[in-house]
Length: 322
Image (cartoon, rainbow, N blue to C red; front, side, top):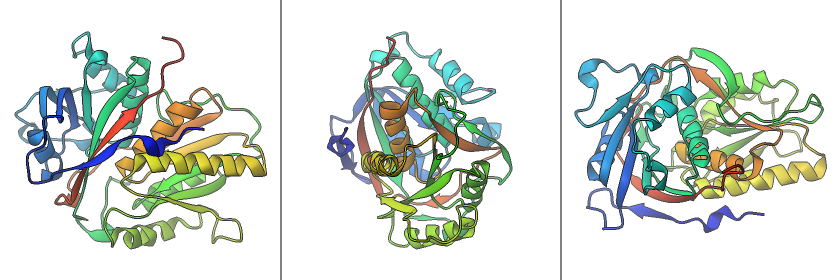
């Protein structure tokens, strides 16, 4: 049993300079033209800093950053990340790496973590900036609502069995009720539980997310009846999230062995990091998959301001076949 809560995390200053320890060999950030991401990129000290330009953001040429960036037209997240890694120095996996996960499109972040494990990286640091608020409160839209497909994230495909008598789907539920509905409906026979971000990033955000999640209630199986279907983990803590996931799976296994397990992180990027860490550490190669509803386009002007900046020291498992 792994206790992820012992992993190190700390708050970094929003307005003041950071200490000498916040200096990296390689700093990676997903480009989003707002202060929540750009100010962190400017503040970070690194030998090499690079932006990732995800095609789903559909930036025009005049929106692109002046700093070094990587952009590619790729078939999927694996091709994009693989092509990016090929541009880095040959010793990249031995460097001290920091990744600002704030602007990442979630499947790219999940695959990047899997890719780091494959490359033998056992530790990196992640930054996450909390917003002061979402631009339109509970009405904020994060994507185009056009879903291309629901599939397993590359690298995170499980060895599933044909027995689906006790499948379990765990959804990290956030603001995007349409994504929750689509994922839930893609696993009709599965038992479904949701992991909610509580405490939330800001006092009002939990209520806002609940208002959105309520719209997906029917897809999740209707109103709760006796058996608990909701669990909670802090919206800004990937390590507690991983612990809660492990506890939920053990609890469900005690009742009856799970035939296939599906994880779908649709909440904050800190939650996404927790889901990926749990999967890579405990479920890689099992009958468990990370699944995601892939969309055609994502919005990048969804939040206002920065309330807190977190640094997480992420310990990755050793790859099985070095």
